[in-house]
Length: 271
Image (cartoon, rainbow, N blue to C red; front, top):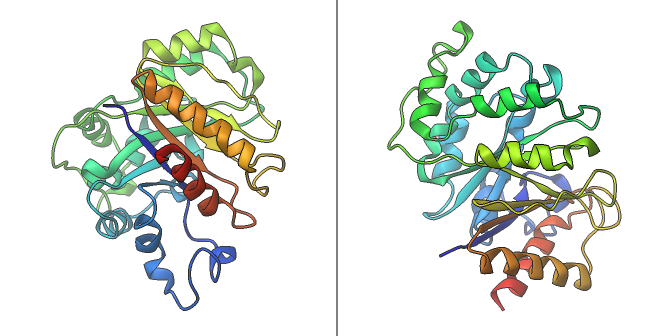
């Protein structure tokens, strides 16, 4: 049966303290608090730098059974090297410890910059490198750079499927050619709601659906109105009716709206 997971992108924001997080809550307990109210969180720290194995282990142990993390792929791959020669960087990423999340490891999202246009040969080669199982990710991780030695994790508890989502920000990706290339490799295209800043590509896939909500009327800042939340609830129900799992993450964190909007959307979907 298809299911939906609704969460937030990141969880450590000063603006949320005393609002979503009650006064006096320790920062160390914020993930546990959020995970008791939401069933998924998108880890975005992994976009900025490789995380330590101890961090992945702590995040796993701070969340309940059945919880799932989505993980944002590193900007070194998507923004700095712009998908070129990514094998070693991907190996470093998968060796960094995210595989220790085990059954709590959900989709991995790859977000490319707004000035990176669709180049079929480049993008298709990148998609071909993405491992489709945790066992394949482990094999790729063995090719990590020597500097990773001593702070890598090269083991898995079980072989599981891996899901990948791709969030392009250049309008050239809104094409039948890219949609076909992604679908052929089991990669879904993220539906990004960004107050009109980047293209909103809504193309159904055979596997699952992934939406990132960056702000209804103001990027990263505005909350979602009742009418907007109703529309997103209808989108979620449509995906579930089609037999697709749906992942929805609110990234409108600047004014603390993300967790409240996530809870409000969950109430609509469940209601």
